[in-house]
Length: 221
Image 1 (tube, rainbow, N blue to C red):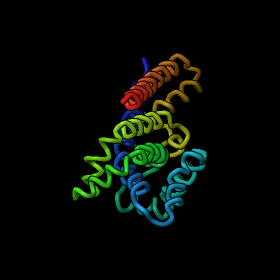
Image 2 (spheres, one colour):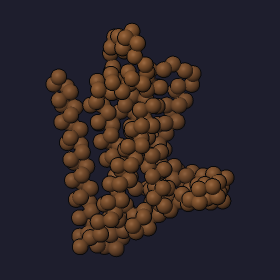
Image 3 (cartoon, one colour):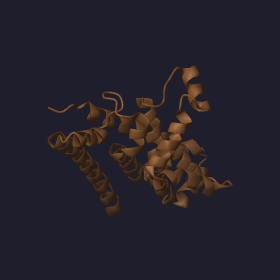
Image 4 (cartoon, helix red, strand yellow):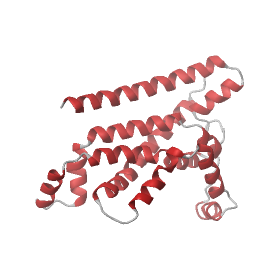
Protein backbone atom coordinates (compact mmCIF):
# COMPACT_ATOMS: atom_id res chain seq x y z
CA UNK A 1 0.00 0.00 0.00
CA UNK A 2 1.49 3.35 -1.01
CA UNK A 3 1.32 6.60 0.90
CA UNK A 4 -1.12 8.92 -0.88
CA UNK A 5 0.13 12.04 0.90
CA UNK A 6 2.65 12.88 -1.88
CA UNK A 7 -0.20 12.77 -4.41
CA UNK A 8 -2.35 15.00 -2.21
CA UNK A 9 0.49 17.49 -1.72
CA UNK A 10 1.19 17.58 -5.46
CA UNK A 11 -2.46 18.27 -6.26
CA UNK A 12 -2.67 20.88 -3.50
CA UNK A 13 0.46 22.63 -4.76
CA UNK A 14 -0.72 22.54 -8.36
CA UNK A 15 -4.13 23.91 -7.46
CA UNK A 16 -2.78 26.78 -5.34
CA UNK A 17 -0.16 27.62 -7.96
CA UNK A 18 -2.76 27.68 -10.74
CA UNK A 19 -5.22 29.86 -8.82
CA UNK A 20 -2.59 32.37 -7.69
CA UNK A 21 -0.93 32.56 -11.10
CA UNK A 22 -4.28 33.04 -12.81
CA UNK A 23 -4.76 36.29 -10.91
CA UNK A 24 -1.15 37.41 -11.26
CA UNK A 25 -0.89 36.30 -14.88
CA UNK A 26 -4.14 38.04 -15.75
CA UNK A 27 -2.76 41.41 -14.69
CA UNK A 28 0.62 40.87 -16.32
CA UNK A 29 -0.77 39.57 -19.62
CA UNK A 30 -3.30 42.41 -19.81
CA UNK A 31 -0.60 45.03 -19.27
CA UNK A 32 1.72 43.44 -21.83
CA UNK A 33 -0.95 43.21 -24.52
CA UNK A 34 -3.26 46.18 -24.02
CA UNK A 35 -1.04 48.81 -22.43
CA UNK A 36 1.89 50.70 -23.92
CA UNK A 37 4.94 51.43 -21.80
CA UNK A 38 8.71 51.46 -22.04
CA UNK A 39 10.96 48.44 -21.49
CA UNK A 40 8.14 45.96 -22.13
CA UNK A 41 10.67 43.57 -23.72
CA UNK A 42 12.76 43.55 -20.54
CA UNK A 43 9.73 42.58 -18.45
CA UNK A 44 8.78 39.81 -20.88
CA UNK A 45 12.35 38.53 -20.84
CA UNK A 46 12.42 38.37 -17.04
CA UNK A 47 9.07 36.56 -16.96
CA UNK A 48 10.25 33.94 -19.48
CA UNK A 49 13.65 33.26 -17.90
CA UNK A 50 12.34 30.22 -15.90
CA UNK A 51 11.52 28.48 -19.21
CA UNK A 52 15.13 28.65 -20.42
CA UNK A 53 17.17 28.73 -17.23
CA UNK A 54 17.99 25.31 -15.68
CA UNK A 55 15.87 24.59 -12.58
CA UNK A 56 19.08 24.05 -10.62
CA UNK A 57 20.11 27.66 -11.27
CA UNK A 58 16.71 28.98 -10.19
CA UNK A 59 16.81 26.77 -7.13
CA UNK A 60 20.30 27.94 -6.22
CA UNK A 61 19.32 31.62 -6.30
CA UNK A 62 16.14 30.98 -4.35
CA UNK A 63 18.21 29.15 -1.73
CA UNK A 64 20.49 32.16 -1.59
CA UNK A 65 17.62 34.67 -1.35
CA UNK A 66 15.57 32.85 1.29
CA UNK A 67 18.46 31.62 3.38
CA UNK A 68 17.79 32.59 7.04
CA UNK A 69 21.11 34.44 7.05
CA UNK A 70 20.21 36.56 4.01
CA UNK A 71 18.49 39.94 4.20
CA UNK A 72 15.16 38.71 2.89
CA UNK A 73 15.30 35.39 4.73
CA UNK A 74 16.10 36.99 8.08
CA UNK A 75 13.36 39.60 7.54
CA UNK A 76 10.72 36.94 6.89
CA UNK A 77 11.87 34.93 9.87
CA UNK A 78 11.78 37.88 12.29
CA UNK A 79 8.60 39.58 11.05
CA UNK A 80 6.40 36.64 10.07
CA UNK A 81 8.12 33.95 12.15
CA UNK A 82 8.05 31.92 8.96
CA UNK A 83 10.74 29.71 7.48
CA UNK A 84 10.65 29.61 3.69
CA UNK A 85 13.22 26.95 2.93
CA UNK A 86 12.19 23.32 3.41
CA UNK A 87 8.53 24.19 3.91
CA UNK A 88 5.36 24.04 1.83
CA UNK A 89 5.45 27.84 1.58
CA UNK A 90 8.90 27.55 0.02
CA UNK A 91 7.88 25.08 -2.68
CA UNK A 92 4.79 27.18 -3.39
CA UNK A 93 6.95 30.26 -4.02
CA UNK A 94 9.32 28.23 -6.19
CA UNK A 95 6.39 26.76 -8.09
CA UNK A 96 4.90 30.20 -8.72
CA UNK A 97 8.15 31.46 -10.20
CA UNK A 98 8.71 28.27 -12.21
CA UNK A 99 5.22 28.19 -13.78
CA UNK A 100 4.59 31.93 -14.20
CA UNK A 101 5.65 32.06 -17.88
CA UNK A 102 3.29 29.20 -18.75
CA UNK A 103 0.24 31.06 -17.50
CA UNK A 104 1.31 34.46 -18.84
CA UNK A 105 2.10 33.18 -22.34
CA UNK A 106 -1.22 31.35 -22.72
CA UNK A 107 -3.16 34.40 -21.54
CA UNK A 108 -1.11 36.67 -23.82
CA UNK A 109 -1.86 34.47 -26.82
CA UNK A 110 -5.57 34.64 -26.08
CA UNK A 111 -5.57 38.39 -25.50
CA UNK A 112 -3.68 39.02 -28.74
CA UNK A 113 -6.44 37.24 -30.64
CA UNK A 114 -9.10 39.55 -29.20
CA UNK A 115 -10.59 41.70 -32.01
CA UNK A 116 -9.72 45.38 -31.79
CA UNK A 117 -13.19 46.40 -32.98
CA UNK A 118 -14.81 44.69 -29.97
CA UNK A 119 -12.41 46.48 -27.66
CA UNK A 120 -13.19 49.83 -29.30
CA UNK A 121 -16.94 49.17 -29.08
CA UNK A 122 -16.70 48.39 -25.37
CA UNK A 123 -14.76 51.61 -24.77
CA UNK A 124 -17.32 53.64 -26.73
CA UNK A 125 -20.05 52.18 -24.52
CA UNK A 126 -18.22 53.65 -21.53
CA UNK A 127 -17.01 50.39 -20.02
CA UNK A 128 -14.01 50.56 -17.68
CA UNK A 129 -10.85 48.50 -18.08
CA UNK A 130 -11.75 46.02 -15.35
CA UNK A 131 -15.28 45.53 -16.65
CA UNK A 132 -14.00 45.06 -20.19
CA UNK A 133 -11.46 42.50 -19.00
CA UNK A 134 -13.88 40.48 -16.88
CA UNK A 135 -17.05 40.71 -18.97
CA UNK A 136 -15.74 40.98 -22.52
CA UNK A 137 -12.15 39.81 -22.97
CA UNK A 138 -12.14 36.79 -20.64
CA UNK A 139 -15.34 35.22 -22.03
CA UNK A 140 -14.02 35.64 -25.56
CA UNK A 141 -10.63 34.14 -24.63
CA UNK A 142 -11.95 31.40 -22.37
CA UNK A 143 -10.26 28.61 -24.37
CA UNK A 144 -6.84 30.21 -23.86
CA UNK A 145 -7.64 30.88 -20.20
CA UNK A 146 -8.64 27.27 -19.55
CA UNK A 147 -5.64 25.97 -21.51
CA UNK A 148 -3.33 28.21 -19.49
CA UNK A 149 -4.75 26.94 -16.22
CA UNK A 150 -4.55 23.30 -17.33
CA UNK A 151 -0.96 23.60 -18.55
CA UNK A 152 0.09 25.46 -15.41
CA UNK A 153 -1.48 22.72 -13.28
CA UNK A 154 0.23 19.98 -15.29
CA UNK A 155 3.56 21.82 -15.34
CA UNK A 156 3.48 22.14 -11.56
CA UNK A 157 2.70 18.46 -11.04
CA UNK A 158 5.68 17.52 -13.19
CA UNK A 159 8.17 19.85 -11.48
CA UNK A 160 11.01 18.17 -9.62
CA UNK A 161 14.48 19.76 -9.47
CA UNK A 162 13.70 23.25 -8.21
CA UNK A 163 11.14 21.96 -5.70
CA UNK A 164 13.56 19.34 -4.42
CA UNK A 165 16.20 22.03 -3.85
CA UNK A 166 13.86 24.43 -2.03
CA UNK A 167 11.64 22.01 -0.15
CA UNK A 168 13.81 18.99 0.36
CA UNK A 169 12.13 15.65 0.96
CA UNK A 170 10.09 16.00 4.14
CA UNK A 171 7.23 13.45 4.31
CA UNK A 172 3.86 15.10 4.76
CA UNK A 173 5.26 18.58 4.13
CA UNK A 174 7.35 18.84 0.99
CA UNK A 175 7.55 15.28 -0.36
CA UNK A 176 5.64 15.58 -3.63
CA UNK A 177 4.70 12.72 -5.95
CA UNK A 178 7.60 13.42 -8.32
CA UNK A 179 10.02 13.29 -5.38
CA UNK A 180 8.36 10.15 -4.02
CA UNK A 181 8.97 8.43 -7.37
CA UNK A 182 12.65 9.37 -7.15
CA UNK A 183 12.83 7.96 -3.60
CA UNK A 184 11.19 4.68 -4.54
CA UNK A 185 13.51 4.20 -7.51
CA UNK A 186 16.54 4.85 -5.31
CA UNK A 187 15.25 2.22 -2.88
CA UNK A 188 14.53 -0.16 -5.79
CA UNK A 189 10.82 -0.16 -4.91
CA UNK A 190 9.79 -0.17 -8.55
CA UNK A 191 6.24 -1.32 -7.88
CA UNK A 192 5.50 1.75 -5.76
CA UNK A 193 7.28 3.98 -8.27
CA UNK A 194 5.02 2.50 -10.97
CA UNK A 195 1.89 3.32 -8.95
CA UNK A 196 2.93 6.96 -8.41
CA UNK A 197 3.93 7.26 -12.06
CA UNK A 198 0.67 5.77 -13.31
CA UNK A 199 -1.37 8.19 -11.18
CA UNK A 200 0.58 11.22 -12.45
CA UNK A 201 0.39 9.96 -16.03
CA UNK A 202 -3.37 9.49 -15.75
CA UNK A 203 -3.86 12.98 -14.31
CA UNK A 204 -1.65 14.54 -17.01
CA UNK A 205 -3.40 12.60 -19.79
CA UNK A 206 -6.81 13.73 -18.56
CA UNK A 207 -5.74 17.37 -18.34
CA UNK A 208 -4.23 17.39 -21.83
CA UNK A 209 -7.24 15.58 -23.27
CA UNK A 210 -9.62 18.18 -21.82
CA UNK A 211 -7.45 21.01 -23.17
CA UNK A 212 -7.36 19.51 -26.68
CA UNK A 213 -11.14 18.98 -26.65
CA UNK A 214 -11.68 22.62 -25.67
CA UNK A 215 -9.34 23.83 -28.40
CA UNK A 216 -11.00 21.57 -30.97
CA UNK A 217 -14.41 23.04 -30.10
CA UNK A 218 -12.98 26.55 -30.43
CA UNK A 219 -11.57 25.76 -33.88
CA UNK A 220 -14.93 24.31 -34.96
CA UNK A 221 -16.79 27.52 -34.04
